[in-house]
Image (tube, rainbow, N blue to C red):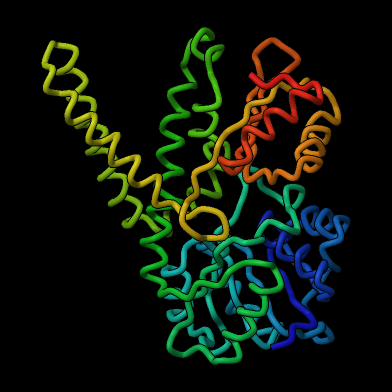
Length: 361
């Protein structure tokens, strides 16, 4: 199905990113939000033009409802009452509750297909939006039995235009899945980050990349996440209970180890090994099996253009950088760039960087 005009209701990170991606593909985008400042910023970023409801309002091919889960159904009902679009979807990270509420309110489920892009950032608002946010990312769609095939086709076209990969799944399976891979990990990261609130300056001075990786998502908006967690409370609670049991067992084993019980190491080792197995199951690049890369560490100065020079050097020797991580040296105007490359390319890249004057430890 061809999408000529799309209405985006909610100009936060996800809504504005979708709008920017659609505009890049030549789609006309209309924007709406209760926050006039958010609409204005999204418009200034080139995400589209403001839409106002009314008798003479233009009818879109598809409306994308980018509001918190608790408000999806009421927004859908109002938009359908206005005849704002032919078809409707939402991008909330919970699916069961909005669909159930839409049924209760008497929404037209034939024109509505719930969906959820598995992409985001720890930052929020239209200012954090990117037109490439969804590239290569999974995007779940959860059609009900009442959904019109054309409505599903419209959402599939939206996903294609945003550069994401469509994954059809039931709402129940979706909510259980995101509890494991997104919602519970966010709470766990917040629990770890909360320990830092009262940490000593010495501890914070020793903070490295590991703690930054573990707590990165804990910097997200608490209000937004309260709405997400409330809408998926039971599945998230079940995952957190399992994690809490593992942590409690590990704590007990460590106390036993401190008291001289050498057999306690086995329980800790088993948890660590299970963690490795779980980590290795996370899909790698392009959704395939996770690949093993060699890491080349390069010292870089904290100055403009250093990363660009480094990537240019990699390009000159024909080495593709699969991933990059930066770690700053506390108190020094330099850091370490960790370049993940194919194992067979590591030696050649190290040699080439040395020849170009880079410090490779």
